[in-house]
Image: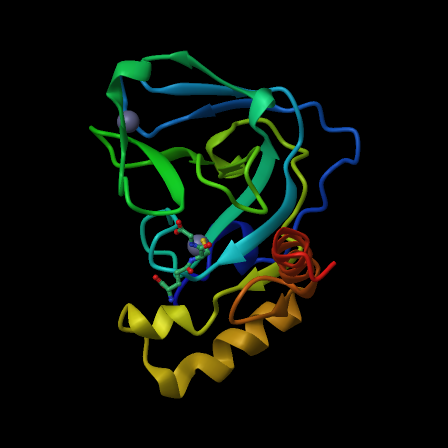
Length: 186
Ligand SMILES: N[C@@H](CCC(=O)N[C@@H](CS)C(=O)NCC(=O)O)C(=O)O
Ligand SMILES: [Zn+2]
Ligand SMILES: [Zn+2]
């Protein structure tokens, strides 16, 4: 079958709970953009949406969050551009190789203060392994054969990832709680 993602295809490698973070690099052979993270990722997951960066040939992105204060651009920041300034998540990508280095929310949102990053861009091992698969049906929007989606869900389940077509129940609860507090319902 087509690659879901290199970190998923042959089973997950469990990370270490006390992983201290590390450095992400874009794919440029020279002068790569470098982003240093001072913590592990949380809520790491596979995302099938059309907006999250995927490595070449993969159907899914693998993306997690870190506190925004843990993120610093440590080299070649001038190469970064925001992919879609209108999106909730401002994805900062390398203008030469297209790799997304970090996504940041600047508007009022339940996840404001957390940056979205792809731990595979770091050579260090030990990052939290993916916890679930989100926006699975979204791969169909990008041209994946709907008749084959059952096989994709089977493969995700086989490596231990629950599949959703939005975010996980935990993260949807966080969003709903934030919305209810804002409206006064809670
Ligand atoms: N089906 C849509 C889903 C897009 C979507 O809602 N993505 C989620 C998961 S990353 C999101 O939170 N997007 C906010 C954003 O992209 O700014 C697509 O594939 O484009
Ligand atoms: Zn680059
Ligand atoms: Zn996504």
